[in-house]
Length: 344
Image 1 (tube, rainbow, N blue to C red):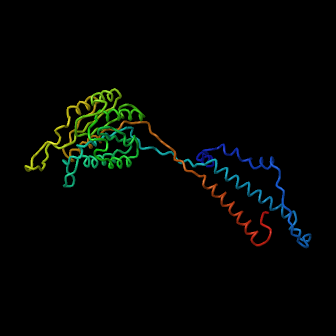
Image 2 (image 1 turned 90 degrees about the vertical axis):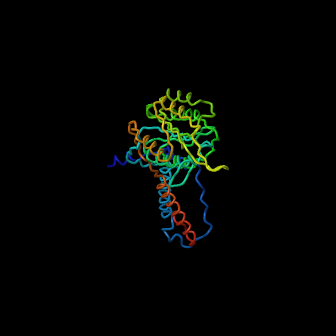
Image 3 (image 1 turned 180 degrees about the horizontal axis):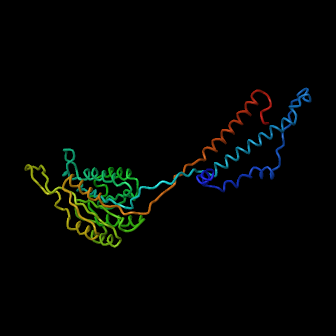
């Protein structure tokens, strides 16, 4: 049992114990403090044997032992003791999954419906993707938002709650009004390679857009070629209804709000990387698409375990402060009643 306790106890700064003899060295090297002689004369002091040197020596020894104990506790606290818990297995499935969500100006088109009311495309995307992220326990998930520019909103992380919150905070037009699909793919490829922890089959990009590439340094197919060489699988989702009624000066008329959706390019991107293209005309279809992607079997990895560490330095430090405070309190109390202080 003692061996088990020793194995569970670790020290972050073990070298701190080298400071243990410091007070002894200081006492040896520095000249002794000259004690101030008392100017008061106590009659019949010779008749009080307890007030002589014997009593003083006893107090000196007690004070020395107490100071030694306080110094030892301070050194133990400085060495940062830690209690190492039992090994805990991390719930890792082995998949690095990046979401790239279009937040260009067209994503505010209100051609989707939720709970009986019309909502814009980004609102529907947030609601459906939120549930998808919540189900991906064990995956490392990252988030890229793109419009005229693409930027990483969340790097690869196991913290699904943060990814969901930052996706929910996304605003249409935040990255510009245009659509840089190629740059989004290129950025996702770069970040997934930087966070690579296993084989290339474990890396997946889900790209959702409602338009056509209109800007950016990379064309979509150039980016797809790069992603294919790096072993990145891309699933593309085209979002937007085929028909929508709008009111105008001449009355109601029907339009196709997805007329600019480049399904041909999105399909080519998916096929180039071994993925698949999906078309979401409404919220229900979008949910079904994420459920299909959700069925992807995770790639097995070696199990990862860690041993939680709990700091213990506050206990010896607190005891040292308690002993020092008690010593000072008793010493002050001794002076307050006009007598010789304890341990003087």
